[in-house]
Length: 205
Image 1: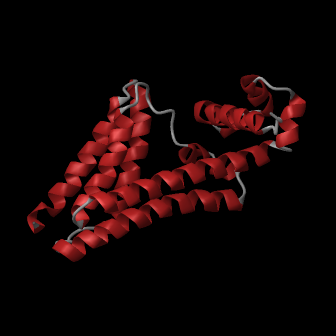
Image 2: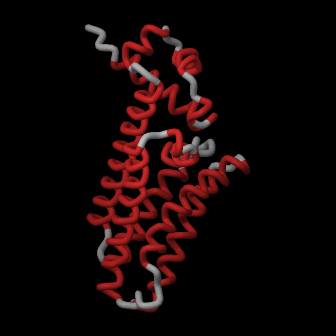
Image 3: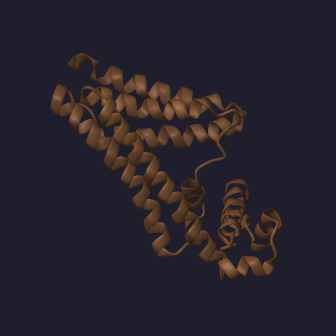
């Protein structure tokens, strides 16, 4: 079978992601990536001309996986939910279930790692980071708008903040789980968010 270099490219990206999550972008040097990936310097520069090119490709890969997870779980929730509130509860529950399977704390979110050092990146990369959070806000806000349309009761709520809360809870849970070395924190926090949303709209049943 011919070798197309895709396995080496994947090893480079995997090594770079692990280093960024462990040390930050500033601590992810080309030399460290080469050592962790177990490749030659020539192999690295065959695939990526600069550290910046690697960082951009790494973000694009993560962004594609993130978008796919969001869209897949949203579509599943739409299929499984009988009404707007149940669709949102199923949506959160799908992520809760996935993170409940972790045996070790989640290594972290690449978006967050980049945002912590945002000034090191160009404008296009910063726009990608902002767009990713707006994408999650848009999906959650749309689901919340559907709940209010069906049940009412949204007058006293800041629906945009409630939509953002899903991401806020998730990102905070990643950090807390690592800090206390407890993988269960993430699923438990998502469970509390799910119950909170259900309680907010329970009166509209």
